Image (tube, rainbow, N blue to C red):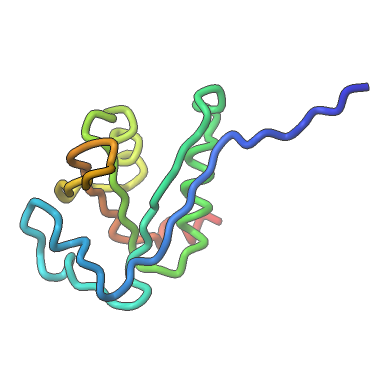
Length: 129
């Protein structure tokens, strides 16, 4: 009898921005001082997040997103996404993210500019665990 092997269908990970981050000063738009202010443990960066195409539409992505962010102690979160990823951006907006500007991708990045998103609070996700 064949045993089904589990397969990885998605992942999400990130890190806490350091209080000395220069991230906000690199955003092309002018941001409010309150948005740019950083302190230890204020902002989580959702650095990478993906779901296999065959697993999409089954709430895998939303579950990964919500569980990861709900487990974080930070006040808020940020992420970047390629401007051409319109479906992805619509999903993020539906999940409570708002675009605050763009940031340069750098010489080895897959795009010259990325849209920067901010989720001002993670409290709603913590209360639904």
